[in-house]
Image 1 (tube, rainbow, N blue to C red):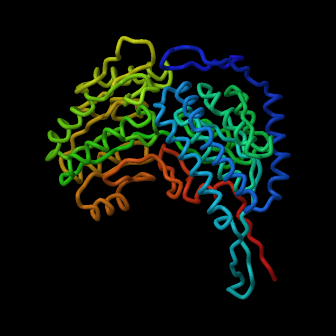
Image 2: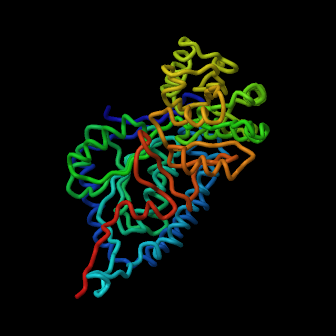
Length: 458
C-alpha cells in the first residue's frame, strides 16, 4: 500500500488520499526530531510550560473544526468530539501547571545520610508514539504533552483512518509556536515502523492498541533494548452487587457501554450481575438499550453513531454471531440496519460463557455481555477471570465495601465506583496483565520516559 485513503464511515465517501513515506523520509523525520530535541531540552521547564498552555488554547480555539474532522474520519458523535478536544486542552494545561514541580530535582542523602545527593529527571530523546483511531486527538496528546514537558521530542505514527486529525494536531502545535521539527507525524507501513523502533535516535516507544499489537511492538523494542509503555485492550467488567441501586447501575452501564460508539478501551463491556438483582437489572438495562437512537453522528439527537470503518463493523458482527452460535442469548440488537454506513445497533447478549468472544475477548463496539453471578463473591471472581486488566466498575450502595473490593481484589489498573468515566488528567491511567504496563496522566506519565539521574556529591 503506497497510499492512505480516509473514508467517512457514516457515508462511505472518500475524504482524502495521502502518500506513504519512504523509509528514508521517515528516518529523516526522526533525525530532525532528534536535532530539535537537543535544543528543546535546553529550555527551562517553566518556559516549556508556556508552549503547552498556548497549544491548549489553540485546541479550544479550533474545537468546532477539530470535532468535525474527527467525526468525519471515525464516525464519533460530534458532541463527543468537542468533549475530546476539551480533555486534550485540559491535559496540556495540567501538564504545564504541574510538570515543572513534578520534574524538579529532588534533594536526597547518601553515605548513611552524611553526604548530599540529587535526583535529577532528565529527558532522554525521541519518543516514538504509535496510536489508534478511537480518540484521534486524545491518544497522541497524552503522550505528546508529557514528552514536551519532560524535554523529549515526539514522533507520531497514527492510525491510517484518522490521518487528517494527526496532521492537523501537528499544524496547530506549530501555529502555537512549537518548534517545527520537535513533533513529527509520519505516514508509514508496519515494516517501516519496526525499523524505526530500532533507530538509535528513538529512545522510547509507546503504543495504544490491541494486546497482539502490544506484544509485537514490545518484542521489537525489547530486542533493541528500548523502554516501552503499552496501553492495550480490555474487556472491562462492571459488577452489579446485591445491594446495588439498580437505577444508578443501569444509567452508567448504558453510558459506559455506548460512550464513543462503544469503541473505548475502558468501556464497560462485561456486566457481572449478582443473581439476587439479575432480573431487575437486565430488564431495565435492555429496556434502555432498546431506546438508543442510532444515526447521523453530526445530529445532536443521535446517541449512537457508526463504527469507525467497515472492517470494524465486520469484526463486531462476527464476534456477536460467533457468541450466539456458541449459546449466547440475544436480548436486543444484533441486526444491523439496512442503510449506508458502518452502523451497528446497541446490543445485549446474555448467558455469556467462557469460550465465546463476548466472554474471552474485547468487543470494540456497542455490545454488552451480561453474566450471571451466584453472589457478590462469585461476581468478583468472574470479573478477574480475564486475560485483561485495564479498568472495571462496582455498583453498590456501600461505598466503603466497594472501595475495599476495588483496592484489594479487583485485578485491574483502574476501578470506577457507582459511575463511569474514561480518563482524568489528575489520575493515573493504565492496566495490568494483557492490558499492558506503564502509566499515563496524574504525573505518572511524565516520569515514564526520563533519565532519573542520581548525582552523588562529596
